[in-house]
Length: 135
Picture: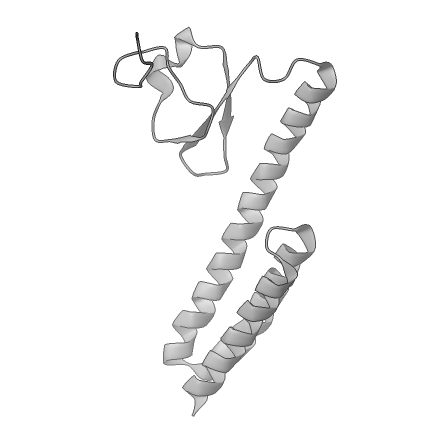
């Protein structure tokens, strides 16, 4: 019995997302490549997954939405990081950037990138951390 593993079979490629540079073996595969934002993430989706035209269109739409979600999440993490960095040095500047962080958190919650309770928890913890740093 032959077991298909990545080490034994060069044509084997899992359905889940690969991270890294896997472009070397893509010429022999029927895969759709999705380059996501500025990250070096390759997503392999077998071409036989979407059979109908509607499924193919939904898959294309999901790839586009994924790019927007990644971008929204990156803005969220960047603004929270800037608030945390400013908290150590200047609490007044941290209060100013807290409004931007709230805006990014609320937008991420509105679009479904994070859940509402997660957004509320992030905002609460940021405000508490700034209050503690101000003392």
